[in-house]
Length: 233
Ligand code: UDP
Ligand code: MN
Image (cartoon, rainbow, N blue to C red; front, side, top):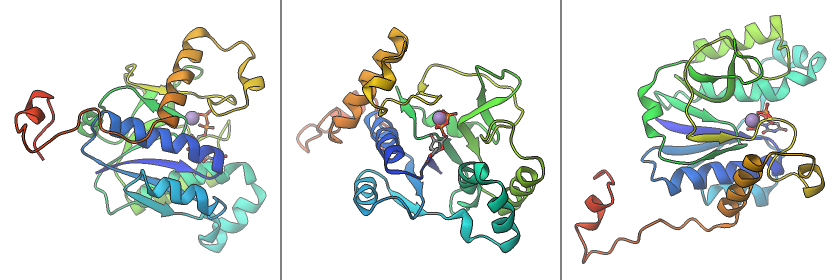
């Protein structure tokens, strides 16, 4: 089982870095993988390799010809299709997908106890789920089904949204919308709320931090691990 995110540009790689660091800061025991596209710079890819367990290269345009042709006429579906690629990660029995513009605030490993497909409602479209965080079971069968569905019906806003209702909790912040924490400050000054600013500050702290564990364990203090509530693994 693994957390999965996606970065198709160097800017989104900044976001992906924060996803991985915040997951590690809160002591995840799961794998953390990122899907990247070939246009991501080598420098960004190397940076991702230092914080992710696996960096997986994906390229939707390398798929079968039918898909290639269909995508040429529907360029807006490109990113959506790349996200759907997480269903091909069949080396994992279950994944939790996190958008690269999310920040994890506490240990969220219990999300793996939920089944496909679990997600939170979209704030703007309450009868749809927000595709920023969801639980999935990788399956080539489901992948093909989703690709066919997206090609036939498209997406009403260019994002991979599907109808679903579930519950949400404030354990993960999702900076959805065109302005991201890594956007230039002139973009961010346009009336973002105090709470958003505070979370953006937290995001920058995570981005600029080095991946240091919260507690340093030493062999001379064997009780430390249990005292910190970490599971023995
Ligand atoms: N994404 C990406 N490159 C892009 C746009 C999006 O890699 O140019 C990925 C990234 O993981 C991002 C997700 O697709 O978090 C969804 O896009 P975004 O978060 O910008 O959409 P929003 O959540 O604001 O609707
Ligand atoms: Mn997002």
